[in-house]
Image (cartoon, rainbow, N blue to C red; front, side, top):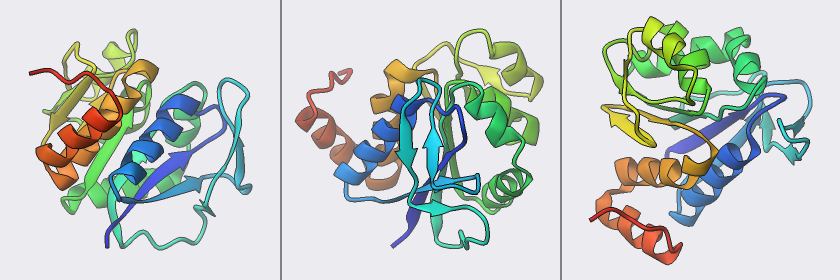
Length: 188
């Protein structure tokens, strides 16, 4: 079974990382939370410390389906500064793999790597110039899917972001059933 990886850096947005992991796991998807630092304990933007499953150093991500970057500041900047992660994201995307980012991460992490060039995408308000500088077509929406990339605009969209990943992986019926079970209002 393919595995989905969520990357944590100091200053990550807790809701975006943990809600996404929760939604994917509810759908029966394999999720591994990865610390890009030398410590499995990573403190988020709001002072909540989470324990990652693994450290990035030396890991083999050949079984990856989705590579997922939460936002938060300075979390997104810290992800962007990780050369190993940048290389992984580009290689995975260029091989046709799935990539997702939410909040500041689409603009701060994905756009500078060229992953969003020519794609519709969203991000946290005020990061639109960086998103567009990377060649993305900004859409003022909560969650945007364009091919093998999904982007979200911020913490309040984290569950919808996770559901979009579920839908892209397991189909609209599974996404709808999960959303109903979680009492998420879905558009008709």
